[in-house]
Amino acid sequence: MTDIIQLLPDNIANQIAAGEVIQRPASAVKELLENAVDAGADEIRLIITDAGKQLVNVVDNGKGMSETDARMSFERHATSKIRNIDDLFRIRTMGFRGEALASIAAVAEVELKTKRKEDETGTLLLMDNSIVRVQEPVAAQDGTSISMKNLFFNVPARRNFLKSNAAELRHIIDEFIRVAMAFPELFFSMQSNGQEVFHLEKGSLKQRIVQILGNNYSAKLVSVQEQTDYLNISGFVGKPETAKKTRGDQYLFVNNRFIKSAYLNHAVMNAFNEMIPRDSYPMYALFIDLDPAQLDINVHPTKQEIKFEDEKIVYAFVQSAVKHALAQFSITPTLDFELDAGIQQMDAVSKPVSIQQKNSASSSTLFQSFSQKHQAHFIEKRSDLKHWKDMYEPATVPDTAIPSLLPLPVETHTALQQLHQSYIVVQTQTGLMLLHQQNAHERIWYEKLQEAISGKPIAIQQSLFPVSIELSVADAVMLEELLPDLKVLGYQIEPFGKQAFVLQGIPADLIQGNEKSALEKILEQYKHFTNEVKFSRREKLLRTLALQNAIKAGTILSLKEMQSLTDSLFECAIPNTTPNGKPTYLAFQKEELDKMFGR
Image (cartoon, rainbow, N blue to C red; front, side, top):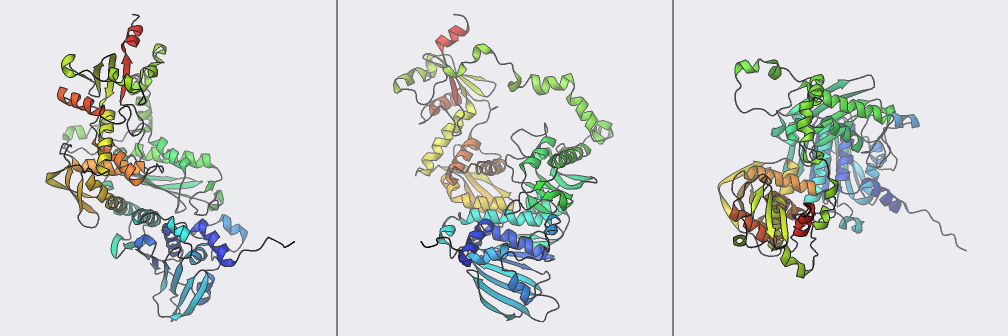
């Protein structure tokens, strides 16, 4: 019988290995930027074309490589960072696996130009499919320029799995920001399709955060500084009022390497407990520095997941450091009026609240009565109401049952009644319904937006005073991608410079005013929905706009508005839930009401 086990050819083995390291253009960006940092560069430039699918070029002014090192750098498991097994547990550099360049050369066309300061000429290497095509001397600047062209040209199936240019560009921006945030003392720039996206001058960490995340953070950052004999923690957290619905502005670094850690993120969230809403996330850029022997960074191909020798100690230190920082600094929003000078001198205003004072206040009977006793989720549950869901009519009720649920015409019964500026009581033929006005309006808007996408565009009302808005680079890229769909859905938004936009018009059914804040909330909510991979981009946008366009709880409605809302809800295809499955109304049959009152 013929033997059937064979060694894979080198080029196929390299492509398989590349799949672990180079999953998309952003993966190459990360590896090349980290190599530039390790090369001692203080100026690093990233140039991309076609969201990295056509070109990723990183240029640095680091120490460069000799001709031999240039050639060796593309061999698998080739690295300058490790000499023996003990070095694995003392790693301070960014790249060390010796896989990055070999992986890139396996799935792309590569051009490398490199020169050391002491050499008269540099070295040029041209490679593809892991094969060196050209190796020759060349005139070059000190440092290294490496270009990755036509990613996955030899693996078309992999190329087909890449997302849209806007989506791939967002991933590249994420990787760029993570490296640039970790090294504020270095100059970084990024250019996309000939346009400069980032120009980050050398400076402090605070300056770098503001450069990347926007000027709105400039006066809203709290410094975190804790030093212990086990680890040091430094960086910044945003004041509570900067918390958002999405996790985007959260950066955690261990020995200057960006990591993802749900465990340590929980530590930061705990430190903000009771300071921000439960469904919000604080901004932070925190740096943990500790002995490399206390952690293992070799547990994942992207090196973004690590293991600590003692996770509980690190958790405790992170939570304590953030809590201490928030207690030391004023964390209330800046007031927009002058306080009386006498008031400003009072201890309660001029001195920060200590942890002891905060704990004392929060444990008091008065505080507890406001923060717990009077909250809806702390109201005692009555056993005789445990079957309330039985009275709720699902969307699948038979057609013959629908008439009894529909509200009576307004002229045949007492006027509709609004409760707590959030609910509408509606009399039906067999009992009553309690509508949640925001949930109901969200369903109405969702189905209206669905019709618009299907070919019935929503009318746009031009703004009397067009509103301009400046976004972070990542948000600007995202909004650019959404502009065509937004226009169909009633939002006329025009680009106005590199990261600025002008809101020229909104859906005709919306009340004008506060458009800037509304657009910012739309983008935040859209990012929140992007975590739900089961939704298409368009579905995320529809759900986002329905949520933001809906009238909010706390809005006073006229009788005419309540009637219109009720009628419109029952004209919907699925009137009983929001797009996300929350009930729009609860139905109570008269017999059940009688029973509850012993009748």
